[in-house]
Length: 309
Image (cartoon, rainbow, N blue to C red; front, side, top):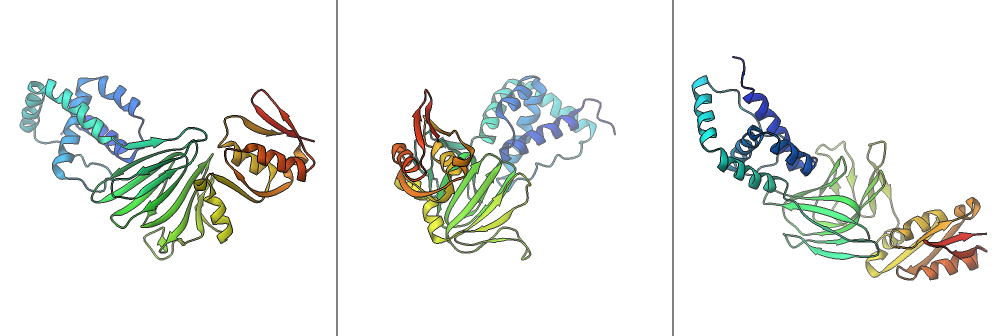
């Protein structure tokens, strides 16, 4: 039969919100605007969330909406909903908070931070970074929202890393995840080989390798030397290491840690290569090295420093 009251459509819409909130792809403020715009929205969402709570936690694809019950059952439910509307409205707010209740942590520019995760694993946040996580008995999910995080994951449940629209598996081991613009990288620092897909035809991530996802959306593997991996993690010791990067690349990497930024005034200087190890809180070391080795001039500006010839 038809659905003149639109209940099936409303429940389907509430299901989509529930799935999006669980996946971390919905904006909480947009959800709240939808939920508060109509009491029926709050009731429908409360019903979906309550059914999910009763069913128990399991990996979520999308809560299934049952076909419309017979007319008598629908009338009974509507009567109960009308009587219990104030409770439902209050309860739906609580359940909504639970649906997108990710724990989170962030750092400012020039700050690093160590975070203990619920299962005893550890996350180390680099400068200007933000992560969210949600752990339960079935799965542990870490979402990199900005910047870079090093993960030391203990044995336990399966896991996943979410970076923008990409989801990658996580296993016990040591990893570094970076999000720079449209480019996301997950580097395995130590651990057992980790298949990235369920079938044997897919990619497998091994120590000293990165899985890279850029603007094309197609994952690819990238090999690293031991020296490159060590330089990647130098920030945990308060250092930054360059192994023949261009001045432009080195400046961009250093600027992530600096409130007073460095700019490069000449295209030819930007293309020059530089190497060395520098303290993250001593950009003057880097500026002096560029000045002496590449015949550059350092000019103080209102916002930082300019390298020029």
